[in-house]
Length: 73
Image (cartoon, rainbow, N blue to C red):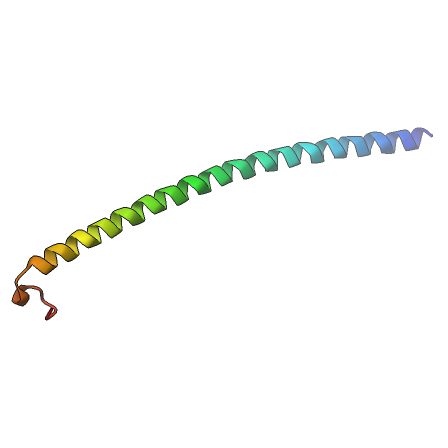
């Protein structure tokens, strides 16, 4: 009977450790999801800025005289 109680105590300890580890992993997962969302938002902003800069450059290139464009347009 004593051995069974010791085994149950050991199992209880392992279960508590597992529960704590699961909580830690969930918190870490939530943090990583927030970081991912922030990175995706920043990427979208940077892509928008690159697209706007490309449009401005294309407009400036179109305003150049044909011989200055350099690609025969």
